[in-house]
Length: 275
Image 1 (spheres, rainbow, N blue to C red):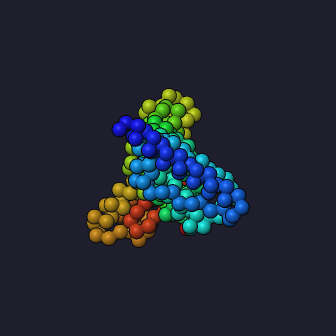
Image 2 (spheres, rainbow, N blue to C red):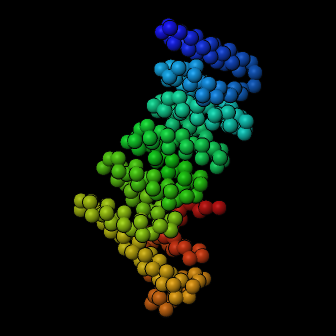
Image 3 (cartoon, helix red, strand yellow):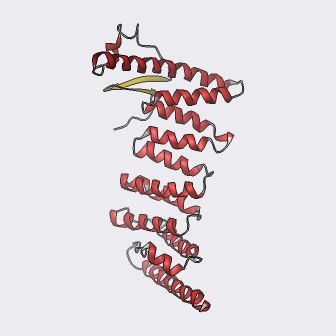
């Protein structure tokens, strides 16, 4: 009985390898397209657990050949490509190259593919809980492609805790928190980082940022008082003067306020504008 559990799945996997090689040979003379992967559950049965790594690596080679061939980035090819990445991740999440290839191939093609990439990267974070690139990639995708700076800040803050040399990511996370209107959290984290740092130029820069965050928090508290008294949001920050503030605090040259329907944002000047 034992030999069946070894040779039957091995025979099936070798058949899949042969099919892959035939497909690759055909792609030399036909229009380059990526053939769909078999359903993940089918691949798991074929691989019989201990050969899942081999099947995942076969799929990875197939994807590497395809993405290096100047393929057409249409919906059909991208959907099949995403299918391959999901299958590889399910079969062998320890194949670290999956996550780098996913980030280079999927997110730049639309929000649907960003979400798939982040799903794969989240799986990678569970498999490699101290690999800083994975939360960094995911955080970048949330900020750059999905315009969710607070979610991006959460992931970059996680990455900053992996090693002392990545502490600068915590500062970036605080900047993104403030950009997304989460000023309290950004200020709290920034103060914690400041307290843990040695004296020097970098600590002085943090101190300057903290002053701007504290001014922003003053304005945020004034907005909350105004809403409590009037049961409505201020139409603009100027409506807070003089009832809640003597004047709108002046920020350093680095930051500027943005305001929309009761939400205050502290943004770095000349940062990328969202459409």
